[in-house]
Length: 352
Image (cartoon, rainbow, N blue to C red; front, side, top):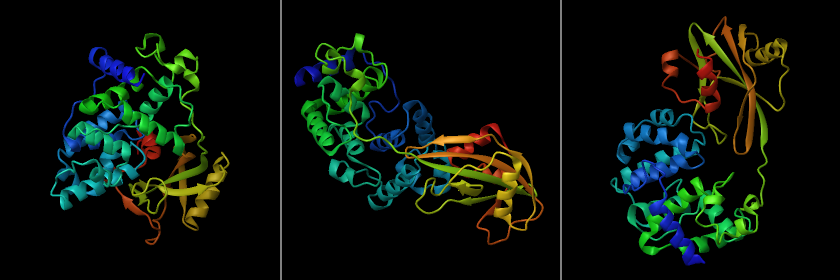
């Protein structure tokens, strides 16, 4: 059954698979690494434009390493999960300055790079260097668990070990890169999470989930995501045509990105203007400001957090104190600064 799975997958890849992506068949480890980091927790349709933009601005890993942080974060703006961008810079600089710009060519050395886990290391090792390491991502877990009818939770230690052993057992040593790309493509276009193409699937004769009518119940996960609710109220304070911003620090979400003057609450504010005037007084104290506009409720779902709030535009009658923690920026300067997607999405429909 295992040998049949590999044979059918490679035949499907050769004769049926028409999925096109610019990094398919790529041998340059920098480009492979860049595509894999971008595609972590990002849909291919969204990541494609970012991949092309990064290569245009940073053609080599040394170009990326030498770029100012702000320029790289601005290029990343909108992709979310900004720890990936910080790891991207760290790894680029490690390779450029400590390894003379030469990407490691062994799995274990690739795995030591910041932000590179077993899946990304296996992808780089197999695609760039032809080494026999099986990739394990969501597509692979889904395909294998359905075909073999495995109900061990894919997010459990036992499941990760089991599927890791199975994936490596199925891997053809001489065609590791082709096989790895094929199984990911198969999971993306045939064995999809929702509405898989079972009726035309080349695997359905032996697919246990299909034969047992269990496709919608497999793969099994043991954990459900618990989201924390947060309420962000951004006061867009303007003073003589410029706006107050600050850079987020610490280990919270959106680290190193910029934001307006923030009031975070554990519960939603009252929807009438008086509630926002009270909040503004809390922020500004005796300073005076006139509320010009209050947005509709804006929401964003993160993996473990649910962000909800509003944007309140305020024209100040005097500047903030110098020790406020916020600095003034012109509209031109704001165009070069990276903001969280929560803010940029609002600005797309409500420009300054």
